[in-house]
Amino acid sequence: MTAEQQLPVEPVGRVLILLDGSRLSLAALEAAADIAHARKAEVLGVFVEEVNLLRSAGYGFTREVGRNSGVARPMDLAAIEARMRSLAEQARRSLERAMAQRGLAQALTLCRGRVADEVLNLARPGDLLVLGRVGWSGSPGSRLGSTARVLVSQALGDVLLWADPPMRSRNRIVVLLNHDQGANHRAVRVGAELARRNRQPLTILVRTETGRDERIAEDLLAYMESEGITARVSFLPMASAGAVARVIREEGASQLVLSRQCSLFREQGADTLLIEMNLPVTVTP
Image (cartoon, rainbow, N blue to C red; front, side):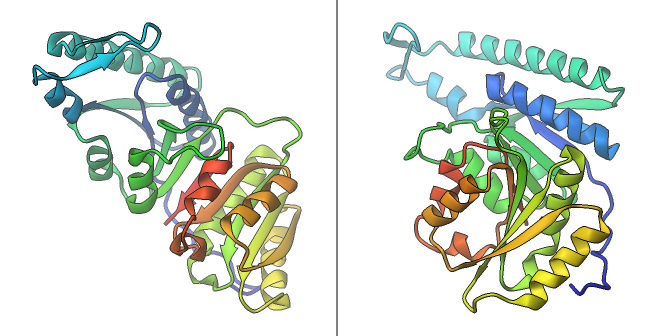
């Protein structure tokens, strides 16, 4: 990308929101609705009946443990199916309410299968998939949930992992790039969109083996200036995931954007970056 070039224009895809009845999925729904309204995009809600849970209930030896009581009891297939129907209806009402408030068209797709497989079958390259950080904990050291891990690594389009609204002191969009510009265009575009929509400045962190590259910095800043966005560029000499996470916190990041092609993901412990960042993270192809 040179100072004179514009990033290629891509058609507006759909906004897909994965609903499961959890508090975070409902918070993610509101974020998805705001994004769809800004983009004037079609909205598709997705509710998946997890087939592995239903299969487990069919075995007489399986037990479920009450969240509050801690008491183990046999899994009741009929009760689980009834609960799923109730959650699906709740998802439908929540989706309709959120979109009606913004005058948006929407539809809800009900599936039965493995959650990640069903979502991947529905998603298209231009779509944005939004989901709450299901199976995640805000505390360091927690594991990345298996569904989120698969969707981040395999989805054809962008994936937004939603977290609770960040503290007000966080007021910058942060984009993490490779020094090699090949996989960065989409991440740069998403970062610019977020900065513009949230009226926040932007920091671009470039992870590099070669030190500071003035040409890359000038090109990135020229593009952001053409978009009316206040930005700065910093270079990180092959910092570890933990070190990158510290820099992002020091920047006061409100949201993070990075490509799954980022060299950091090829290194051991790369999940640390996503696990430690208790803020919305968009992963681009």
